[in-house]
Length: 203
Image 1 (cartoon, one colour):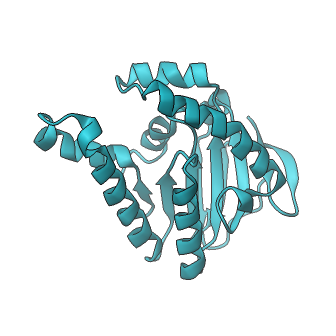
Image 2 (image 1 turned 90 degrees about the vertical axis):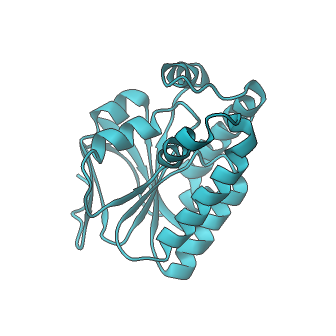
């Protein structure tokens, strides 16, 4: 597998099956809706462990049985507010953290970056770079299709974010120190995301 690692001092192609980060790092897994973020997290973190994984889909699944009679569009804003409140609380605690976020919402990116800076925690990005038409298929597969106008906004903003990450990951999420950009095929080959006290340099 070949991924592109970008940091302020490094830009290189990596032949890797695992991504390694410091023990107290925050990893933001970004991509437009349907890119495969939740699928990747379910595969890599199938068993509960030391790594805390936050995904708004988990919250939605807990709320759905109670609120099924109410259209999702009505309670979606409350779900998002609750989710980001969870994210901000988790950033203030110790231990490795993986955050599911589309990254196309400027306010969310700023909040994550600021909270991480205040907590003194490093931020790293993993960006699933998937074409809009492929992401649409992913939405259809999970039976949750994003509204056309919303999807157009995500799809329009994503290439800009990808190019910003290539220049400087900190322009995507403030204080981010690295970004790994993966295609869907490369993400499928990723075997592990590892957090350790003294991570080995990427091969």
